[in-house]
Structures are given as structure tokens and as C-alpha cells.
Amino acid sequence: MGKIFAFYGPSASGKSEIQKELTLSGFQKIITSTTRLPRPNESDGIHYIFMETSQFENHIRTDAFIEWTRYNEHYYGTLKSSIEEVFDQNRNAHIVMDLAGVLALKKRYDHVIAIYVGADVESIKRRLAIRGGIPEEISKRVQRAEEIELKSEYMQHADVVIWNHDDTRFNDTMTQVREIIAAHGSF
Image (cartoon, rainbow, N blue to C red):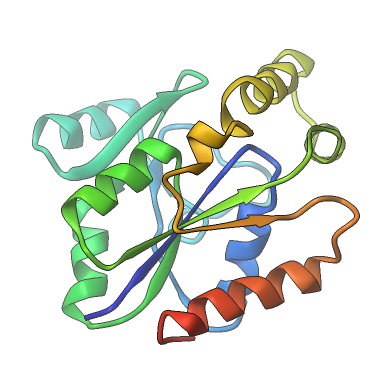
């Protein structure tokens, strides 16, 4: 049976960059759904499945999601069909989620490896500033990282913890990720 490598951690810790590198290497990505508008560099069906709120709420009512959450006034969720497809094809895949999503996956499936990706607060602040956005939203994300996502209680659910600080070469982070995946029998 395939395995799902579920990455979680604070905003701007490097999860999406890791996901992008894995996808470019041919590792299957599980695409999650959201009601937020696409960023300029995002495409429907590649970065997210972008949905209208009414469509997302209909999926909630029909129990189509393994997990879903509301964050910054937008819905995010993972369709059960996306997960089942990976296992049906006996493939390995990766996904970026929040902790609640990781816990929902681990509760339902045995073949989930949770990988926490962390970064220090200064790295997070710098990356969020480069990414741009509304200052209040950036401030909320930094506060959430400081108060929740960088605490050991948040990390304790991970099978593996990796750090991706600004002083860490991203190639070194990716080497670590590939070693973790290989240690679990695949890449």
C-alpha cells in the first residue's frame, strides 16, 4: 500500500517549497481544495482545487472531505476521493495540511507519515514580508506561529521534525526530506 507524507508547520516555514520540489521530482502531490482566490502564480487543479463557497459547503454536507477547516475566512479541505485514489493505485504521495488535517489522516489511515517543518520566527517574518500581503494578516500568522505552531505540543504529533531556517541551505532541507522518504521505503 502507498504512503502519504503529510507536511505541516507554520506559514512560511518552507512546506510549499518542499512540496514544489517533490512534485518536480515526480513525486505525486495530493491537491487540496480551497475557497480563497488564487494567488497570481497559482493555477486551479495544480496548486489547489479552487471552489466557490457554496460548492465547498455542499461537499461538507455530503461528507466528501476527510478534513476541512476555515482559516482567514476561507475554507480549506482534503477530498476523501483524493486520498483513496493514492491508496487504490498503491502510490506514494505528499500533501501540505494543518495539524487537524494531519491528525484526521493519521486517525483514518495507517500509512501516513507526519513531517513537521519548522523555522525560527525571524525567518518566518522575513519570508512572509517577501511573499507580500496585508500587514495585519502577516502579523496574525507570525503571532499564530509564536503562540501555537512553534510549541512542542504542536510538533509532538509529527513522526519527524525538520527545521528550515534562513541559515539552512534549502538543498540541505531537501536532502533531509528525501532521506526521510527513503527511510520509509520509497522515493
